[in-house]
Each structure stands twice: as structure tokens, then as C-alpha cells.
Length: 105
Image 1 (cartoon, rainbow, N blue to C red):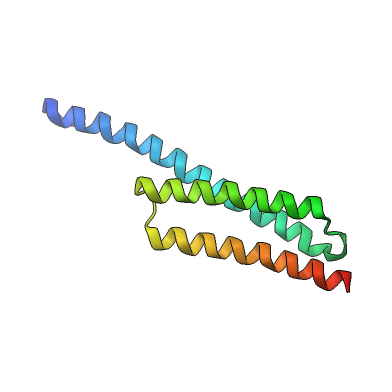
Image 2: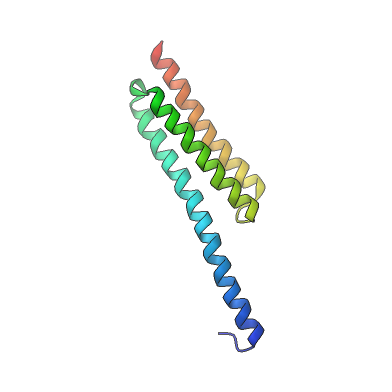
């Protein structure tokens, strides 16, 4: 534990920032996980993909983008990491749309 007054203050500040960063990181991970689980369930039943489920997936994608962008803006993750995560999620949604189109044919 720090002894010097300024070190004590720095410790308090670091703990406060750590909580904020963890909250943002966990929110980002939770959004991505929810979207991944949702797309996995829909892919298992490709013929049952409805317009409502696609709209929900796109809304979840928008929320995940928001969380990822906020994390990147705050410096929690790097810019390229954010771009990679967003690309990966978008690819899953587009594959859902493709599987729906194939199921309709």
C-alpha cells in the first residue's frame, strides 16, 4: 500500500478508472456475446428466420457497435481491435440474411 499522499490519491484514481473501464469492457463483451448467441440460435433453424428476428439482430448489432465505439473512444480497446470486432459481428448478421434468402428459394 502506498505511504505518500500523492501515491494514495493516484491509487484511488486508478481504482475509480478501473471500475469505469471494466464496466465499459463488460458491456461491450455482453453485447457481442448476446448477438453471437442470437445468431447461433437463428442459424440452427435457418428456415425459421423471420423479418422480426432479423430486425432484432440488426438492432442488437447497432447496440454492439455503440458499445464497441465507446470503448475505443475511451481507449479501453484500440481502434483496429474495435474495427475487427465490428467487422466480425457484421459478417455474422450478413450470413444470417444470406441463409434466409437461401431458405426462401
